[in-house]
Length: 199
Image 1: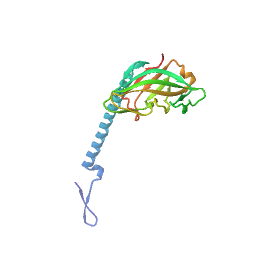
Image 2: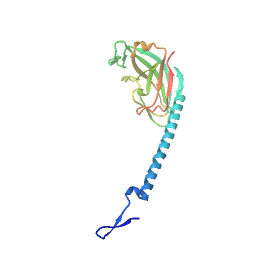
Image 3: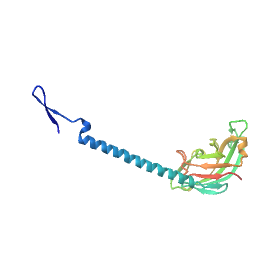
Image 4: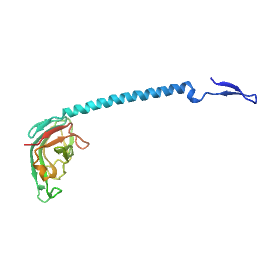
């Protein structure tokens, strides 16, 4: 309620409470504070459940070997063989691809991939990563007929492709090579897995 004040001139004035002393303003501040506390609590719960999800995903990654047929949600994958080369040519023999460095080689993975999803999926070599210990190598896009370069695969279709990695010569003979598969915006593999490439 406004307080009545009689001024020196005889007029009656009403003194209003400052906004921060009004009941509705205090209620609004309390509701905002409760909302902030509640959202922080749910963020903490979400982050802890996110951590549990990340940990369970790490636990779900199984290691397979060359020749094993492995499944993700969308594909059936088999690494049939691993080889190396100083250069790669297309079917015509005119286009020749060489590794970037003089002492580099291509590690070539020969894979069979089958779409086990219910719709067409896109696959690209970028979802494959080669590891020698903790050193990661990304695939090199080589335009050859059987290279894995953003292929669309219909349900039930099986393809055979090669995946190329430009690596230093000493990596070719490394005993600790692993292939890791994941998903990205170009490649809907539908899962994560790891394949031990030692023979």
